[in-house]
Length: 509
Image (tube, rainbow, N blue to C red; front, side):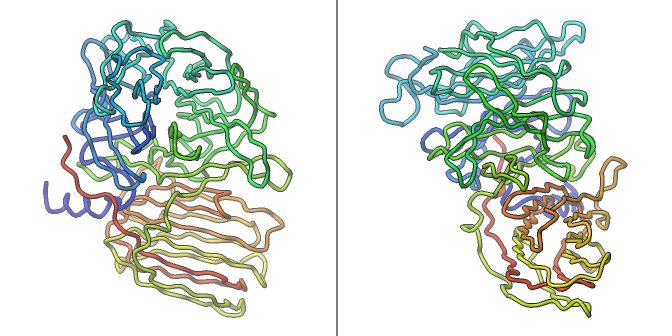
């Protein structure tokens, strides 16, 4: 590694987001809580070969922040093919009969079984013989390594492009449910099983929403509606390419699920993100207290193979908790909030309330440490605006003239991200501007901004809008400036925090 490589390795390495010690990662796989710790499996391939040798990497954490890399859990096989995306469940009662009697590897009381993976085996050794099947595997050591079921595959549709099984236990119907993407027919196929081995087709969610080229990585989950005692089912479908933002993204549908069939409430769908660097969302199975939380791959297929740094690529988003909330016309909308950020605050750099008068340009400047993730929290109410030019700018910058700009524009009621002022990476598909619409009748807004290495996450109005965005400056951004022009604001909260580093340098096993 050259001195220059080492500089960018450290500059872009996140402090609280999971990233690989080396190599290329994409989809999260098999997110599960085993009663003691969280397991994050992920699609992994070495940097020297970005098209083949895909298998499952593995990391564990007590809190979804302090990740310990455990190495390879399901390996690429010349005979069987690459190990593509899938999921892991806690088969506590050994419904699969894969675990020898009395030898359950998990510590939970009265556990008869353990962790079972359902995943895609993809054999592309010869294109005309390309085949994609669903395999089952079980772990005898608590999730570190998996042994394939002797009679795989458990599901073979004779289709080269059915993949990415998501499996969960559906208590009302007392069976396992599997959601599977048929990539090029733009369908989500649902299957049911009593034992994770024999699967029966239940229904098909026909083409809906944005079609793009491929449907991938379905996730079906039941979410609470805030302020109500009701729940709705949400089906997440990853789309690549063909997203309105460009490249890959995640769309979702709200509806009902009776154990057999998912029915969308109406034709209205939405995207999980107003930027373009979040993909392949997966929800943790069996998270404590029934909490619905998960992560996405921090990247976009348009430029992921070209972006810096040279020695590793890819990260996961912060763990996010998911809810629904009714919008201004009564439709349930997705709410995403980062989990556990308050516990990570190491130092509050500034915390204040003040008024920004519209008649003059007002600035607030904060020096930022370059060895920590930065958490900015802002709550403001508009008191006066000179149309159409009233705006608030939140600007991260450095002495080299690089600028990462975020802000609020009064007339359009929008919040923007502008990464065009950063000089560390350029690509014709690397879009530089993103914007989210805020409620038209709103006179106030709230934002939480988390800048961590090459990652930027923006949460608007308590999670009602989320922007996930890669950022590549050539030098560290060490100054934060808050300024307004022709916009009067009552700033009720302006807080900037430096966060504890939770992800340490690791030697890959």
